Length: 342
Image (cartoon, rainbow, N blue to C red):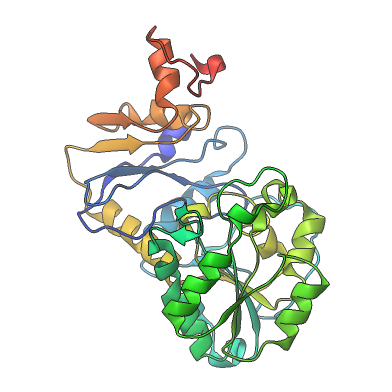
């Protein structure tokens, strides 16, 4: 049962830069939220456990957050380059297949074209970044890759563009700010796929840093369309995921590219977040409170039910609050409500 794979635990006052979901090749085990300098309980759950997953998977999931060496999933084979997608396999992974960037030798990185998924979805006032924390959080991994002679290309989304490219969602300000933090030019590619992008990547030298334009300018990004994924991965040799806050989404730039690029490994930020979770599990305390946010009740209801017996308090936040308020008979105006869950 889903409830059997729920582990509430207590986080200390340390504040990691971001918090999201532990990546697995299809879905995520970890859902939660994190508020600066707030003691928060988190939980792990896989909503599909009842019907689909095996006990071996459950054991592997538990081990994922208890082993000391934490890293993203990656193929065991050390060979580089684009590979084709075979028939979908069952979700049955080996724990020794996880790697981080520090598991790669300098020879494996030197001269390689690395696609790194960062989370530079920063708040903007027009074209002015009002908080560059997420960009700063990406710098250590990028600096490490540069130091090993890699050619680094950053990809990310920004906002929620609806109908293709929109200037207000361009990553131009992010590329400029990253360049300031790195002390070098970060060229913004005019697109995230295509011949022009490939030409810019091919022309880059060791230690250069590029940034692809907003990945969500294509609807295929969120649909994880295989044809689009192949185009996105085509110029690169390997993949680094350092976007913990978006790693739970099975999008082209987070999950899809791992089927084409090997190895696919974690960056420092992703590994750091997992270490926080590991510490929280090992040192959980009572009383325990869970803060659960988000816009949709539909994606949280199983977790909320499971948490009822695990936590002393559950605090609901985000847009899904209005579904609860409507269920209590209160007026919510035109706020977001999932009527099917009232």
